[in-house]
Image (cartoon, rainbow, N blue to C red):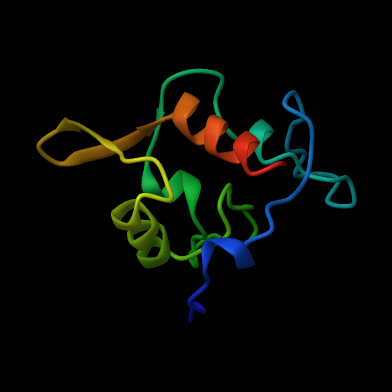
Length: 103
């Protein structure tokens, strides 16, 4: 289903920090940063590809397993535990990671 990718092989969709995703007009470039909420936390399903929702663009277009490998390797921000069953990433950490990669 997913192909294993290294962090160098992932090319996020370019856009400015204030861009937004417009599902009505798919011909417009999609800003990854615009897919994130302004503040707060995001969960795994909001970051990576979701095979159940292929129409929804991913902030980081990789599988969940690849994202967790990157976290373990230290090349992606670590999540925080919000409760016993809830793990999420601060939006600021994800946004910084994206902008540090030059998108």
